[in-house]
Image (cartoon, rainbow, N blue to C red; front, side, top):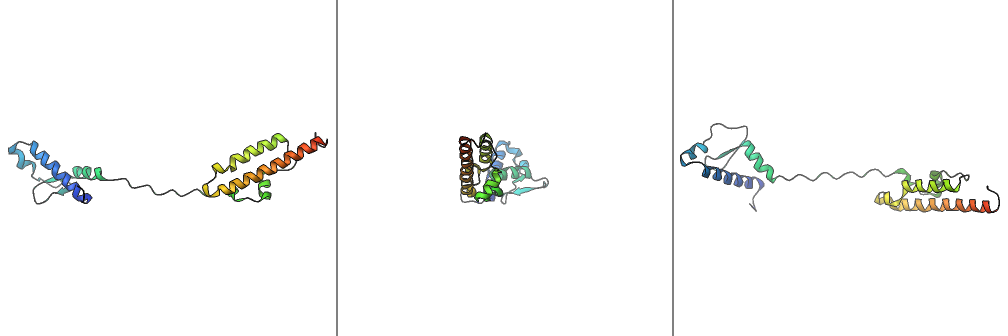
Length: 158
């Protein structure tokens, strides 16, 4: 079957099946088995002989050789717009820092920001932006925590 078209290989297979079916019949019934009494909705003729097969047999033989086509490539999802905001002012705006937050509130904001902006969760082409956003957010939060600690040590904050 190598070097043949799909159609030729299907025909060869059908010929082989017809020969096997003819061998199974008694000698006097052999002519009856090869006789065409009417054409079904679909049929395949094999050569110049009297051998024909029904549409379901031809379809089954062909479908055995059929390969499913590869699914079309999926379109990548659009880039999250927040990952395009990499200026320190934009990151501070996204963190909603007012200067009156508690340390616990700042740590909670850091975790929430990391959930939405961590480079491991970002699309491959925006991982650099996500890394930069995380660095800026960590720097801003760390500076705010240091300022709070200095204010506490000076007695300016309770």
